Length: 123
Image (cartoon, rainbow, N blue to C red; front, side, top):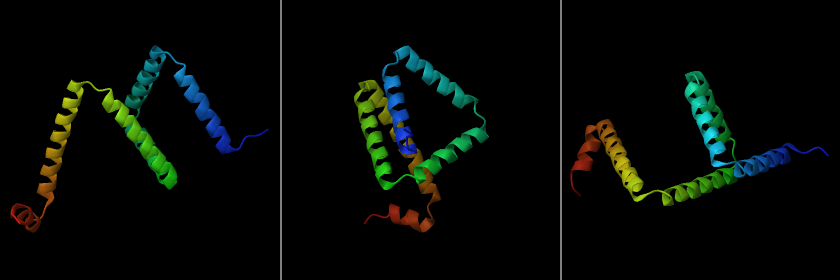
Protein backbone atom coordinates (compact mmCIF):
# COMPACT_ATOMS: atom_id res chain seq x y z
CA UNK A 1 0.00 0.00 0.00
CA UNK A 2 1.67 3.17 -1.20
CA UNK A 3 0.77 6.41 0.53
CA UNK A 4 0.02 9.61 -1.31
CA UNK A 5 2.42 12.52 -0.64
CA UNK A 6 -0.27 14.18 1.50
CA UNK A 7 -0.72 11.07 3.65
CA UNK A 8 3.03 10.63 3.96
CA UNK A 9 3.43 14.22 5.15
CA UNK A 10 0.64 13.74 7.67
CA UNK A 11 2.15 10.53 9.00
CA UNK A 12 5.58 12.11 9.40
CA UNK A 13 3.99 15.09 11.14
CA UNK A 14 2.16 12.82 13.60
CA UNK A 15 5.29 10.76 14.20
CA UNK A 16 7.37 13.87 14.94
CA UNK A 17 4.66 15.23 17.22
CA UNK A 18 4.56 12.01 19.29
CA UNK A 19 8.36 11.82 19.33
CA UNK A 20 8.66 15.39 20.61
CA UNK A 21 6.01 14.85 23.28
CA UNK A 22 7.88 11.80 24.59
CA UNK A 23 11.20 13.64 24.88
CA UNK A 24 12.61 14.71 28.22
CA UNK A 25 13.22 18.40 28.91
CA UNK A 26 16.95 17.77 28.51
CA UNK A 27 16.49 16.33 25.04
CA UNK A 28 14.25 19.22 24.02
CA UNK A 29 16.87 21.66 25.30
CA UNK A 30 19.59 19.86 23.28
CA UNK A 31 17.54 20.25 20.11
CA UNK A 32 17.02 23.96 20.81
CA UNK A 33 20.74 24.46 21.38
CA UNK A 34 21.60 22.53 18.22
CA UNK A 35 19.21 24.62 16.12
CA UNK A 36 20.53 27.82 17.68
CA UNK A 37 24.16 26.88 16.87
CA UNK A 38 23.17 25.78 13.37
CA UNK A 39 21.53 29.13 12.68
CA UNK A 40 24.52 31.04 14.07
CA UNK A 41 26.94 29.05 11.91
CA UNK A 42 25.02 29.68 8.70
CA UNK A 43 26.51 32.02 6.16
CA UNK A 44 24.50 35.05 5.02
CA UNK A 45 23.79 33.25 1.75
CA UNK A 46 22.36 30.24 3.56
CA UNK A 47 20.22 32.48 5.78
CA UNK A 48 18.97 34.34 2.73
CA UNK A 49 18.12 31.04 1.02
CA UNK A 50 16.22 29.92 4.11
CA UNK A 51 14.25 33.18 4.11
CA UNK A 52 13.42 32.76 0.42
CA UNK A 53 12.21 29.20 0.98
CA UNK A 54 9.99 30.27 3.86
CA UNK A 55 8.65 33.19 1.84
CA UNK A 56 7.85 30.88 -1.09
CA UNK A 57 6.22 28.32 1.21
CA UNK A 58 4.01 31.01 2.74
CA UNK A 59 3.00 32.38 -0.67
CA UNK A 60 2.01 28.91 -1.84
CA UNK A 61 -0.31 28.35 1.11
CA UNK A 62 -4.02 28.40 0.55
CA UNK A 63 -6.12 30.97 2.41
CA UNK A 64 -7.33 28.22 4.71
CA UNK A 65 -3.75 27.22 5.57
CA UNK A 66 -2.77 30.83 6.18
CA UNK A 67 -5.78 31.27 8.47
CA UNK A 68 -4.90 28.08 10.34
CA UNK A 69 -1.32 29.30 10.76
CA UNK A 70 -2.53 32.65 12.11
CA UNK A 71 -4.78 30.88 14.62
CA UNK A 72 -1.94 28.65 15.82
CA UNK A 73 0.32 31.67 16.23
CA UNK A 74 -2.39 33.50 18.14
CA UNK A 75 -2.88 30.55 20.50
CA UNK A 76 0.87 30.19 21.00
CA UNK A 77 1.27 33.87 21.82
CA UNK A 78 -1.67 33.73 24.21
CA UNK A 79 -0.14 30.80 26.12
CA UNK A 80 3.27 32.45 26.09
CA UNK A 81 1.86 35.69 27.49
CA UNK A 82 -0.07 33.84 30.21
CA UNK A 83 3.11 32.05 31.29
CA UNK A 84 5.08 35.29 31.63
CA UNK A 85 5.85 36.70 35.02
CA UNK A 86 4.67 40.20 35.88
CA UNK A 87 8.26 41.41 35.50
CA UNK A 88 8.53 39.92 32.00
CA UNK A 89 5.24 41.56 31.01
CA UNK A 90 6.46 44.95 32.18
CA UNK A 91 9.72 44.45 30.31
CA UNK A 92 7.76 43.54 27.17
CA UNK A 93 5.62 46.67 27.50
CA UNK A 94 8.72 48.85 27.81
CA UNK A 95 10.31 47.28 24.73
CA UNK A 96 7.13 47.80 22.75
CA UNK A 97 6.98 51.45 23.83
CA UNK A 98 10.58 51.97 22.72
CA UNK A 99 9.95 50.31 19.37
CA UNK A 100 6.86 52.47 18.81
CA UNK A 101 8.83 55.62 19.62
CA UNK A 102 11.54 54.65 17.13
CA UNK A 103 8.92 53.81 14.51
CA UNK A 104 7.10 57.11 15.02
CA UNK A 105 10.38 58.99 14.85
CA UNK A 106 11.34 57.34 11.53
CA UNK A 107 7.82 57.87 10.20
CA UNK A 108 7.89 61.55 11.12
CA UNK A 109 11.29 61.99 9.44
CA UNK A 110 9.97 60.44 6.24
CA UNK A 111 6.94 62.71 6.05
CA UNK A 112 6.81 65.58 3.62
CA UNK A 113 6.44 69.10 4.97
CA UNK A 114 2.77 69.14 3.97
CA UNK A 115 2.12 65.91 5.90
CA UNK A 116 3.98 67.27 8.91
CA UNK A 117 1.85 70.41 8.91
CA UNK A 118 -1.34 68.32 8.76
CA UNK A 119 -0.34 66.28 11.82
CA UNK A 120 0.72 69.32 13.83
CA UNK A 121 -2.26 71.61 13.16
CA UNK A 122 -5.25 70.84 15.38
CA UNK A 123 -8.61 70.06 13.81
